[in-house]
Length: 214
Image (cartoon, rainbow, N blue to C red; front, side):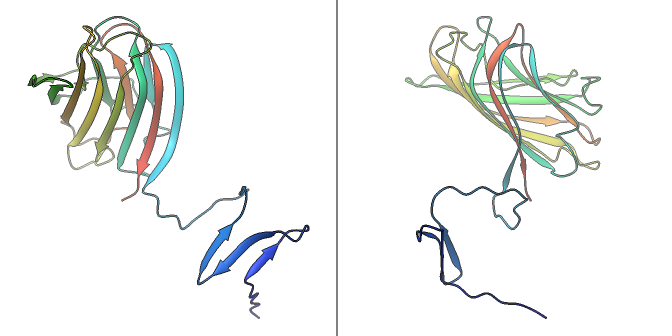
């Protein structure tokens, strides 16, 4: 036996309208708290981890977060500053949960100064998993830099992996710059660990990891 409850409005004990239902849409007044899981959403980004750090050598996303649940991952960094002046920021992938960083990578960046026509390119290859996303970041605590990174195909055991990124901040000189980067990780093994760090010294910032639904 199937029971069907048909309503247009649901009111609270004070006779205030709490929920209105019309043409398949539901409007909820006030705050809503869910104690169970919610399914059926259309959000393509799923937040997996978020932390604000101070004076740390690196930020790591390990194999408890980088899993087969998602193939593509996005990292957002806000107010990221090196503790030492003029430090290059790096992304380092690993296939053994951070035990080794020995992957061959290649990456390049296109940069432009925010208030002039100065532009250019930078590139390098690495055998120790290094992919650089910016250059010589300023260490003033009130400047910070913002990062938007996407790492594709991390869990594939057939194809190489790729990264695209955007970083905006200031050089050690104080001049504002942005860098658009891309990189490739030359392994068919599944990546299960991502490290973020400066070339030397510690850093501050907030870092959030998302899984991308496909």
